[in-house]
Length: 292
Image (cartoon, rainbow, N blue to C red):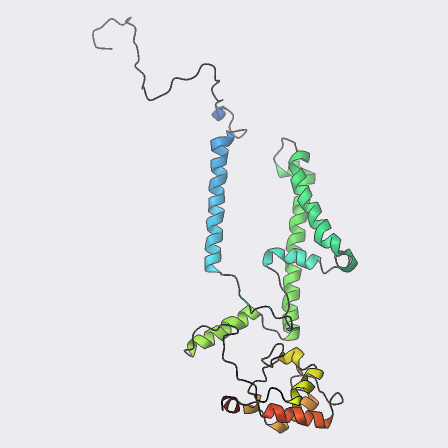
């Protein structure tokens, strides 16, 4: 309105043609700002908040996986009886649960399907059973108690499982495969051979592979520790052992066992002639003889 005009003159506002005229038959959405903390529009308000929270969690996981890559052990070896199985950390609690009497053996179905199934079904039914409007946890004793009990059980079982695993490693003198593999890779890189790759390392060939002494070793179950190809499974490799030990030393170890107790004595299981035959054959396992 220009200066000096009639103050009673009717003013007409010109709207922006880019804004659509509201449909009188369609009710306007309620103003949720009038109800702070009680409700909000699911789309896009609530959905956007949940999406942003998911993005933050996903980025956190990506940073964690890049900073701490998953440990990598050796390829699976069914003959390795010294291997101590260990699941990922988020399965430790259920792994420990399966060690107890009433969730293993004849009750294995209860431990693998029953208890996890009840927990899964319980989570599915929570929205239908817990329909109260109260959201403060101390005002919801049943739901809060079940949640706290589940958290305590999961943390406790995870802690027990990890401690038991560490005790088994110390008791059996076993180094976890991923740690041993990292150490071997470090030594290989420092020596200029590149990264250590299991199965790709150079193996000394067997000398007189068809010798009857090998059948005697199979009969005595030596392959359970030294592998069927004598490259070592639970015990050391016997390829090229003749470069390290003499025939007399080999015969003494076979007869009386190793000093550290890792290899049992075979005196009484094998005759003196059989021990001598095996020791003679093993003493011929030399790198130079294999390459000639």
